[in-house]
Length: 515
Image 1 (tube, rainbow, N blue to C red):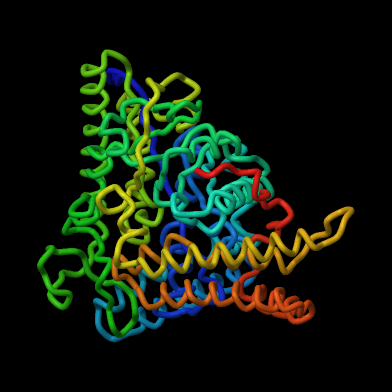
Image 2: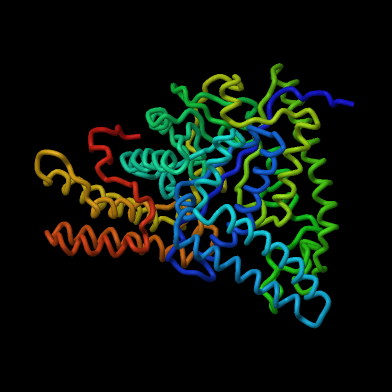
């Protein structure tokens, strides 16, 4: 029996992001974070998408990949480090499989199979970086690519010139990697300030993500923002929170593998959630078959939730509705071990249940757009305002960010003004000044401090990149041209991402109106 088609369209949106970690520590915070996410999320999620494409599915989701993450997934140092990490995972699993007790042997066998499959996938498809892997999915129409600004700054607090430069360079970086320029973005932290829509429109952005409360909870249609043609799509919290919220969601089910508890003898994860208040040493052993049953249950539940939500919004508005569920990509696999399995099954189950699935671009082109909205200042952080990135707890970082951007812009402006007449040549010192300034103002540092998650590492990183800017700027300002060049080259050894970044494209003082 063919199910009744649900009125409207469902879009799944994933946001893939990590700060620049290469050459900035390994453990407990640093490159290990990248390699864990790569192995547990990016490899299996891409495999799910490739499998769906092979089955004839297209337009299955909108995938946001920030330029800073894309840079790491293509970086030779990171590629070598990832290969080493996967091999080490396989060795740890092999050692566990040789232990005398049965639980460790079973754990080792299971992890060895996972590690061997990941290593084969990486060596076969990923050794030349993520760009060719993802471009195949983009060109086939399996996914819509969402871009973003370089280095993931919290845009509402960023100088308008630097904001425009970061966005245009981020889109140019995507064009180089994937052969097409994104027309949609997931703005860092969904941060928005009125007026930013004009910069989006000027950059060729046609749609972007916001959190549901920014649209006062009415997310059934995209909304043109203020007087622009740029459409804001809102995350449907009623549907999204069914999967994951600050307090609950599927990954907390007792049968799923526990993220926080490690087996100390092997460094592997051997237990299931068991219960929210159960101590790690008392958690039950992980059972894949039990977890698979929970996945099937949660796939059916999510399909039911989406169908009911589409129906209720149709009844409320009198027209087919658009429902957007949006998550961090790293939820699927890294945080929720069974997440990629759930993702693959739910993206097959939704169409089978009569739910039409499409991308944000599909929704915009097909008219799932309502009346314009005067979108307020907002984010998807705590309180849905800016407190995580602008609150008292990070007031020093806000001040630091303003200062370092001012120093970088002033130094580059003076260098360009005194560069003589004629053709302006590329200046690697200016490039590195802007590169380090953008790394200093990454939204991740304030987030990590506000959430007390490796806050020391975050502050160190913000101050390190700020120091780089000041050191280079001081040499430039004192006329020490050779020293400035050496400093820029030295910092570039650790922070050489975005080789296409070109300071000559920084807008002039008068080119960008204050927003």
